[in-house]
Length: 592
Image (cartoon, rainbow, N blue to C red; front, side, top):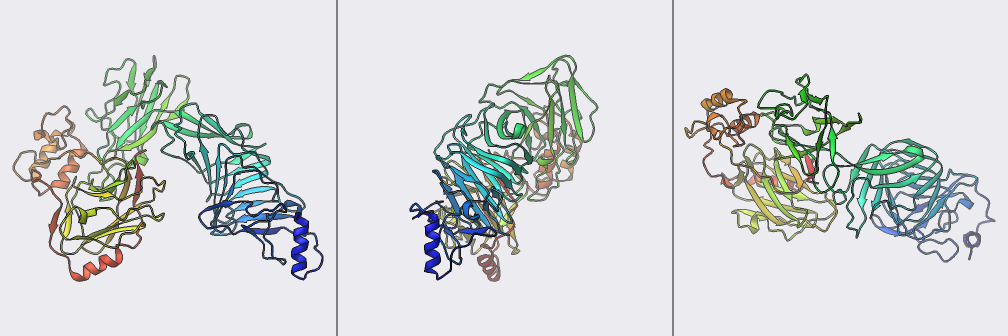
């Protein structure tokens, strides 16, 4: 039965008169399952029938939207339409997340092809996001997709899945215009082991003109070959192209302000430079000897410091070039100021404030990748992405005590069989109804006191086969306040034992501060007697941070996860009720 016959049959069944040509667009709603893929043309018997497209009528119809009848499709119910073969019926428009506050998705892969074209009404637009947040996923083995226009709003995401270099033989072709906004996410295609390299590029859309740009470009950590890879977009000639560039990396320690200039290993791109500027107006910088290890200080031929200020440090070479080869690094010292009084949850160095711009011999100015490293000033849930093992680690410079915690996953990516404190036989800790969405433990008699560097393994708490890195970590202190900790996917921090008892009196006190003050700026120290608390050989802001954290204590004492006096019964009730509450998540970080 062809499409017109289907409509005549439906009209007759409904007791309606002859079908009249539409005088406006007719909407067909996607009714496929929420949060799951379903075939775009499921149920098609040859006449455009559909299981997942619906128009309430009259007459009520389950048909694919057809531009011949001025019909458009709206995927706005949270479902995902899948196109993995050729679709013979062309909609007048295809709108993802059309209505306010809605979500929806369209995935095109494995030879999937469709044409979106207008007739009397419509504009032939593939619209990713109208009033809501849409997701259009394109895999590099897709077929030809022809539209008149492609639009994307600020709330929506275009996902490009790649499985090799220079793939996307087919792409979206727009005959009229392409308008961009929102987010581009570049992912490694499922079941692929591809890792990107400098020089790789993919053209995923083509049109006569492209307006707008993406607010953000996100990259799958599994796709990135090293920390210096930058995925840049180009709109030249009406082609939306993603290309991979290799850049220098500056590692910045969140705690100390130490900076290392490096060209990551694992590739073959040498990177030359003739000048650079390290800037951090918010944190501030210092060009003092012992803080900034400039290239001039290191005796590198031709390099000279250039007018250092409290906001930026620069060097240039008027006669030559410094080439940094893969795997090579240069220590720039601790030029970035660290706030020794930063509260829990705020790093002493705000890495987002740091920039490093270098000039190539051709005159091009390039922004290096800034990579945060070192410990995080917070109680941190560290998750190993390779095996799902989780550890609560106090990476801050102060002791943290808590009476309960919850790890949450909106996607249900948790393991209810995790070991936790209870499984490790830590006294008075008990699990509370673990599920794939929430893991909670409560302490019924005492408070867990974690000194800086203390940690507690929780076992396999996360499904490491999942792509859902959506974990949230909250803990409750004895005053009943629920705090948002940090989730970090990667390795645990290596926290060296710090000792700010510089005069070995047994207590960190004011005399030790005076020792640090007198020694500030010294380098190459062999012990702590001049103010080097962390043993890195330098007397700097990081040592003041250690002194502040240890003031009034005896740092030589061995730190363990200790129990302190029992909270009240009423407070334990608060724990049980609120540990599962959703708090604002402070930070979620990824090592990649």
